[in-house]
Image 1 (cartoon, rainbow, N blue to C red):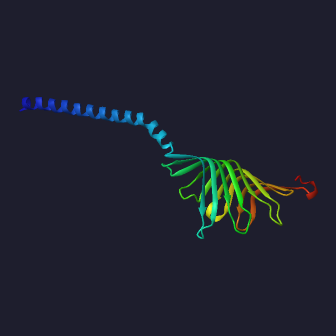
Image 2 (cartoon, helix red, strand yellow):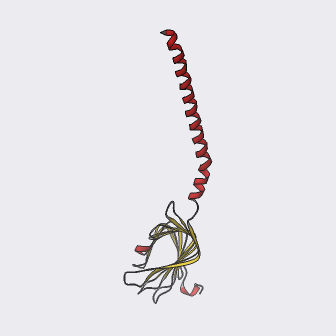
Image 3 (cartoon, one colour):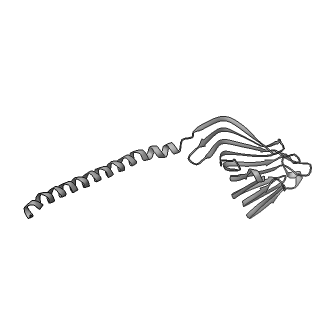
Length: 199
């Protein structure tokens, strides 16, 4: 009985070793494929599925009138994040009773429904002068436009100039409906009399 068992035990050990070797080879092959495909997978995610140059689109309100106009030098959509990136961003917000508000930046990102625009680098907000108010100019390196709420926000340093008054601070909320601009912290102000303001 012992002599009969020895060859079988040797065959089982040989078979087990071969299975172990095959499993190890399969694992190494999978690891090599993942390493090889990794950079290509990442680069594919960073590629847009479409790009437009010198584009413009206009939203409409429920009454059919224009809400805002967005223009740019280049628009690219990235499907993995459902994100749109814009180079040379420009937005005009229309209003029936108030002057239109303009916002521009070097680059911008927007979400799928275009309700939020994250503006980066040389961001400028401009509101033309009205009967009782001078033109308003606000600059920063970042602003967030909440398009459906007519609000522009920033947590970064900003500078606002209106007539002879210059305000500097960190953080800002500009409400187009209420026609208000609020600086949140570290606020300083400089005032020049009207006769010294350059026009």
